[in-house]
Amino acid sequence: MSADLTRRTAADLAADLAAGTTTSVALTQAHLDRIAAVDGGPDAGVHAFLHVDAEGALAAAAASDERRAAGSPASALDGVPIAVKDVLATRGLPTTCGSRILEGWVPPYDATVVARLRAAGLPILGKTNMDEFAMGSSTEHSAYGPTRNPWDLERIPGGSGGGSAAALAAFEAPLALGTDTGGSIRQPGAVTGTVGVKPTYGGVSRYGLVAMANSLDQVGPVTRTVLDSALLHELVGGHDPLDSTSVDQPLPSLVDAARRGAEGDLSGVRVGVISELSGEGYQAGVQARFEESLELLVKAGAEVVEVSCPTFVHALATYYLIMPCEASSNLAKFDAMRYGLRVLPEGVDSPSAEQVMRATRDAGFGDEVKRRIILGTYALSSGYYDAYYGTAQRVRTLIARDFAAAFEKVDVLVSPTAPTTAFKLGEKLDDPLAMYLNDLATIPANLAGVPGMSLPSGLADEDGLPAGFQILAPALADDRMYRVGAALEAALHERWGGPLLDRAPALAAQAGPTDANGASA
Ligand code: GLN
Image (tube, rainbow, N blue to C red):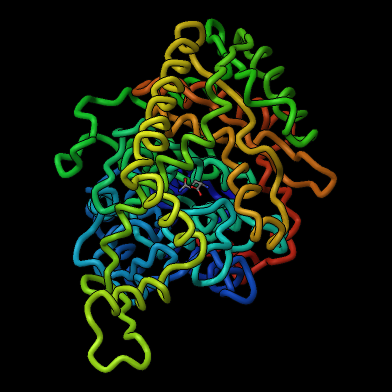
């Protein structure tokens, strides 16, 4: 086994724990050491974490080791530590959503996915950084300072879940949870060389996920391999009576699909390249890696054809009406009375509730959140409702119909995940439209509720930065993307001589204490 526990996959760590060659305490400590060595904070380092719970994680790890010793592990992943995006409620642990308005809020309950992690014995390392209320594509909209891309600390790690993706890319955690409303799991995956999955809408519970846009949000796995995503997805997924949109239907086995795919045979699988989501507008290297991956799929036996989804060109505009509408309504609950921050207006003796609300929301929300509240409130106002929100909903139906027609012809659809590799911090911060364009290829899946995966397709530019390959499947056929993804991953590992993350230059320069004394097992 690899000398350094932090470099191993979750599947390998689970096997090590089952074989008794390591303990949960040892590997949880190794990841905590790695966090201490590379994470830094708002001013330096990766800054993937907003809150690290060393004590809680080690206590959970010790309990896990006891269960193992007694021969009764709670799950296959019992003892493997995980990081959780700060938009998911964690009992006893701060949950800020990257916002000042929730500073100091400690939820009295766990999100269902978090409860499932705890019941399965996974120690929670901490909460990861994100764009405020999951609005953004770079994690620069976090009120607590940006996360930096472990490939190059001057660059963005994607967003909104840049913290979870960077934690995986910097080997600070072997697993993480993210959420994806328009791409926030997949786009960070693409620019950090990690794997991320947005499950079928309703496939994973949203109970305890602080909502941005309820009809689009999904919780999903952030990992370094397709198999690890399958393991985590199966663990947190499945019906939850606490979420009224949760699908009450057994999922096909994702782990089986990933294992089968890894054998490399895709004969009989029909892959559709979405004409509207590649080529023009995509960075040359990103497009080149995409085309090379298509060749690898053909080599594995898949049939690759081009499929047109004409309404996808309207997906971005549709999303940026529906999402702000839902968000503006969701964020109304942050009223200075119920949670977190309360700011009293200056120079007012006995302020009214409205004045306190206004002062608190002014101080507590960042610019991007305010922009979307204004947009959503305007689009929902009487006189404009049908023209904006109503039209967007109708186009949304057309987008779902394009998916349905395409899936009559092919088993999965593919595209590059994001149009470019990681850009520099600050580069798009003052240009909301340029920021929104990062999600061009990921948004259609959220609008239609279908599942999507991103996996690294290779190094795509002269700076040696990674690009992502996106696989989309019909609703409830998440297993298909695991099969195709695992086959492509195996072929790409052969092509690049191993996992792409082994080539991340900034990481080599950041060797922490666990790298030096790594053989702690
Ligand atoms: N970047 C997109 C946005 O800002 C998607 C965010 C997300 O998926 N949470 O809305």
